[in-house]
Length: 209
Ligand code: HEM
Image (cartoon, rainbow, N blue to C red; front, top):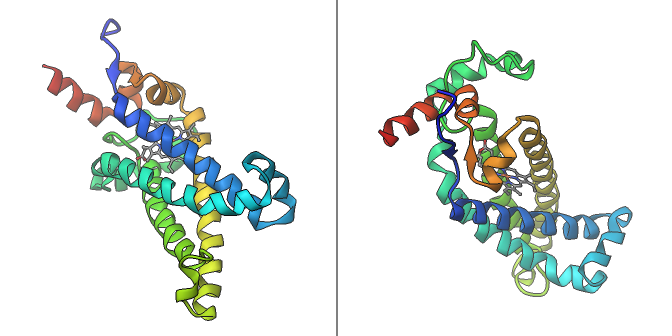
């Protein structure tokens, strides 16, 4: 069993889409923070100064949305929440304590990953919609000041949740050993697959036969 070959988790296109989205998201978040509070104003240095940060941020937002939609289209199917996930969710304490032996078997993603995925879907759509409403000088003139005020608050709240979600995502990716390799080289060991995603592992093995 130990001589089993590595298992492909992400093909080249999946990985390119993921890392393009990740880079765009980070640029969007840094330029947004730079505009949000004077304490982050120094971040404008990365984008050519205050005016350029203000000009570029919304365009980076649109590119992030497009790239994320592509990612969501590729990964959405595997993020549907099933009964097995709900059972797995009841054992969250054991998972956090690194005791995975008695956990119910799950597919390609665990419940935490799936919640993260749907949180990103909702927050990125909210960021886009509210961002369009406050985008001067193009679209904002079409909205009343009341709507713009609400959109500013929605934009800040959605950004806070999305950035927090990505920080958790990065932490989890580093915490579960072998995950980073899945998204860099595309492959995981059979042991990793068996331990973390047993149902997915069995499906892959069945397909390989
Ligand atoms: C910036 C640093 C990031 C790192 C280090 C990172 C790392 C990873 C890794 C290692 C995986 C594979 C997990 C697995 O297969 O079990 C993954 C999956 C994924 N990542 Fe990232 N990621 C980053 C940013 C982002 C961003 C910005 C987004 C979206 C806005 C994103 C969306 C996703 C999605 C949707 C998945 C598939 C898992 C799922 O659907 O729940 N990632 N990431």
